[in-house]
Image (tube, rainbow, N blue to C red; front, side, top):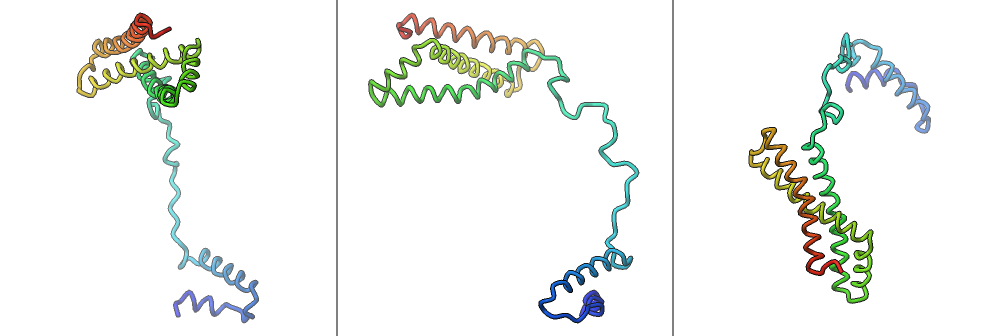
Length: 184
């Protein structure tokens, strides 16, 4: 019998099997014995003079929007992410249009009525701009992935090209669509 078990057995009172109070007393005795006898006590770590993370840090923990001066490159990087999310919702509109075209003239007329309204055209115009801006901004990121365009002047030029190119291509595409009769 191990030494701990002999000590517990020596201090046990005789009891009936159904006497649960004796079990709780036994566990309480073991806990008292283990935590107060220096031979069986678990060594505790020494207290440090100062907790490790309370020292004052004079620099920011991570870059934050309030730390840096806003630049066009930063803003268009965020816009690139936003247009990427907007394309998911615009693709639902495109899927609705395709499903309606396959379903028949009644369903297609409903979609055409929605996209022909002012709100519908505004949404489709926004989808077109998001698509073209995301495309050009993705090309800008691809140039960066190739290792080019990191000088300040090149970075600004690529950013302005993505911004102006997205807007102008959207307007040109809509002018062309209206010119060939797609806007009727």
